[in-house]
Image 1 (cartoon, rainbow, N blue to C red):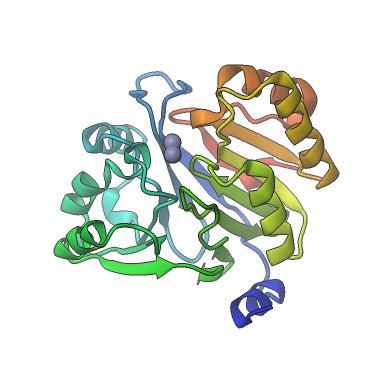
Image 2: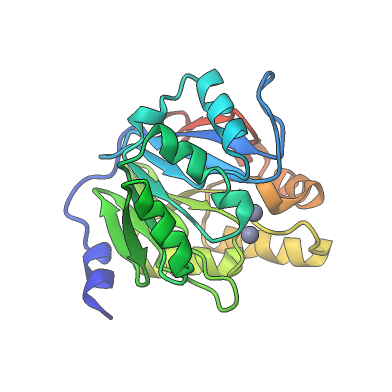
Length: 256
Ligand SMILES: [Zn+2]
Ligand SMILES: [Zn+2]
């Protein structure tokens, strides 16, 4: 076990009391008046820092949706990019024009050119390889996966862990298992893209039973999860299925 892993396993502070996750970019519609387009981004507030997780595929759509949701680009202190794909990083340039000096956490495997262009906006780039603490109660799983490296975000709340995934290319069950090994706490919610668009019913049901075995309490699959998989999650999680999409606001205070 390396030092970072040890630090994550022994948090000294209490979890975040009232965490809010606002989906500002998604291909699934949720709130009327917001634009939908392929990709994912969400704003995380209530922890020590205000965090934008991923940036969607199109900067204008991202900024328009943020405005409609009364989310100030200026309020964002940290950006966390899950992985290199354009539907998660495409909006970053436009965002940085609005808010140039942020700190960006990205998988170390990102191309050098990409990292350099971020620095051109005055952004501070932190390359993530191993699991690490991003700010109080907020952690990265570290970059996982083989072909497409991806990090997921973990927020420790007073009700358990919130896990946010971009596309879940390394495998959603692998991500959940990694989280369980990293932070010893119950998993309150897993949300984001689960990458199950083309998965068979059998595969999705296996994933659902792995979630149940891991005592995942709520699920909020969106982005690349696919309608069929989302319907299966809804069927098996019932009232603990959180319907998500562009404009959805999830407050942990509302979860039991
Ligand atoms: Zn992807
Ligand atoms: Zn994606």
